Length: 358
Image (cartoon, rainbow, N blue to C red):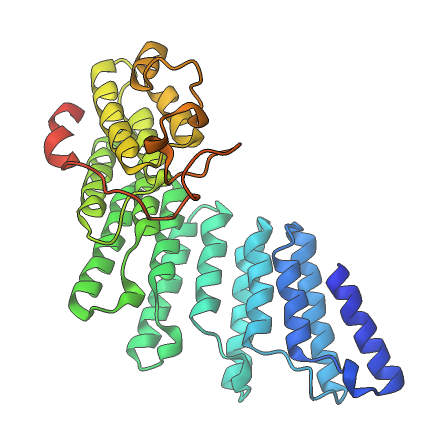
C-alpha cells in the first residue's frame, strides 16, 4: 500500500506539473504490482493488482507513452492470483493468460506470454486443491511443450515447470499420483540425458516433490508402490554427484515411513526411520522439523535412543556435526541452511531396505 501511495503521488505530480523528474513509468507500476503479489493479501491483493493493471491501461490510452502494460505487468497480476489461495485463482489466471494471448495475436508483442506466465498458471492450479487440478496443470505443460516444439522458445518448459506439475500431483491425493509424479521426473531425467540442457535438469526440489506425492498417498492400493517410489527417488538423488538430499528431503521421507508403513509394524518403521535419520545426521541436516517427524514415526523410547538420550531433544541440543548444514532457531548450525547442500545420503535405500519395507 505504501508503494502504491508513492506511485499515486508520482502520477498526480506528473499530471499537475508535467515535471519530467516524477514521470511514472511501466517499471514503477510493475514494482507496485510485484509488492501486491507478495503482500500476502489474498484475493483482495489480487483484485487490487488487476485494478492497477486497468489503471495502467487507462493512462496509456490517455496518451502516457511511458506507462504501458507489458508481459511483466501481466505476470505480476497472475502471480498475485497464484499466491492468493482463493478458489477462483486458477480460473482467473487462465482468463488473464487467454487475454494476453489475444492481445499478442492481435499485434501487441509487448504482452506475449512466456515460460514464467505458464509456470505461474501451473502454480495456481497446484495450490488450488481443486478436484482435477493436477490434470489441468499437466494440460498447461502439454500446451507449452507443443508450442516449444513448434519453434517458439518463449514457451520452453523448464525445471520449475515440471516440478510445479509434480507438486500439483502431490497435492491432489488422486489415485496413481505418486506414480505419475515419478513418470514426470523420469521424463526430465531422460530429457536432460539426451540434451544436456540444464534448463530441464531435475533438482532436489523435484525429487522432494515426488516424495511428497508418495508421503500423501491416500488410497490403500497405492501405498506399497508409493513407498517403493520414494525409496527409488532417494536412491537416485543420493547417487548424483552435485545434487544432495536436504533437510526437507529427510522430513518428507520420515513422513513416508510414518504415513505408509503400518503403525503396528514397529520394527520396519524403526528400521527405515533409523536409516534415514542416520543419513540425515551424516549430512548435517538435522533440524526441528526432522526431529518432530522422527518422533511421530517411532515410539518415545526409540526416539530417545536415536538422539542419544539427550536432555535437550531439540535440534539446538544435537551434536554440531548433525546440524552443521541446518537452520536452527536460537543459533546452532553451521552457516545457515543450504538448499541441496551438505553430504550425500548413504547406501542404496531400495536395495538395502526394500525387503524390510514390504
